[in-house]
Image (tube, rainbow, N blue to C red):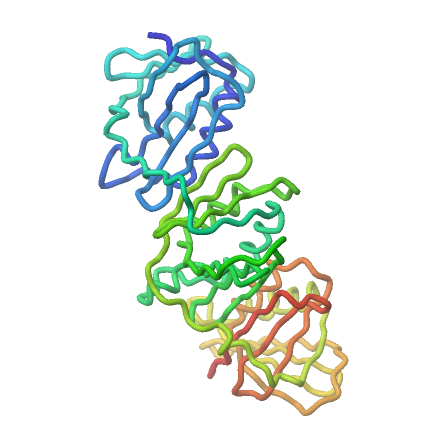
Length: 371
């Protein structure tokens, strides 16, 4: 039975949208598949890993058939379509428990698994809370903190991003216990307070799918999950059950020794000295010596090798000699786009507060190291 006959690009686009969360090797084989469903002249594509579910629709009706549903390997189908020339005609034909993908003189026979066995997330209609904002605003909210989120930390609540509605603000916070990134954006109207921890994988998937546009994204909060609706895409993510650390206690308030520095000049100097840091260490240290109108950046390694950079800054306060994780500094400088950044200290044993001049809604805190 002929199921779909369409242009390769029209079929590939929705498939690429949903395939990002799919792992090739799964404990349940059907989780490697995409559910393709034709219903009321709409062709939808859906994938899940049991924690996250992504659904989208093709830009146009792909089938002459009334209704059908099947699941097939998402990665294999995507790889097949990518390997074919752009704008070529594709047909998908079902033969028993196999799907025949044909294009010109190419033919691929893929195994099908029953659609009724696919573990779809139950969608609820009534949300506890909902906010709508521009996709660009929300993408920035994720981008400026996601690099600080922990990876596979035993403190499971750190392996996600805090998404907090507080009055007329939407706040996101990421931390791994050694550094913290905070950013907020304004909402049109005050909302009831709502706090969830969004898994790291969902954060990175949203960052890939969101556009730098004025188009809206609707965020709906439910008891144990969050639904994001934007650009014909619906992403549902379970939330991490746990209590996120009180970020307000981490943000320093007495860091009155500060200087501003060109972001790219600072980044390039760090990249150069990092050549002689201990590459194998998870926590690579760099020493910052701040003196009057002068910043010295020093890296050493276990072979007693040393690299030093000296930069001019406008600084008139007491000297500060502090050691920080060089990777944490470069993460920030690679992810912000401002021309300059501001570094504020209290002393050599306190956290460093890094901000963007003129931007009150973004803060980045790095704990000192002993090296």
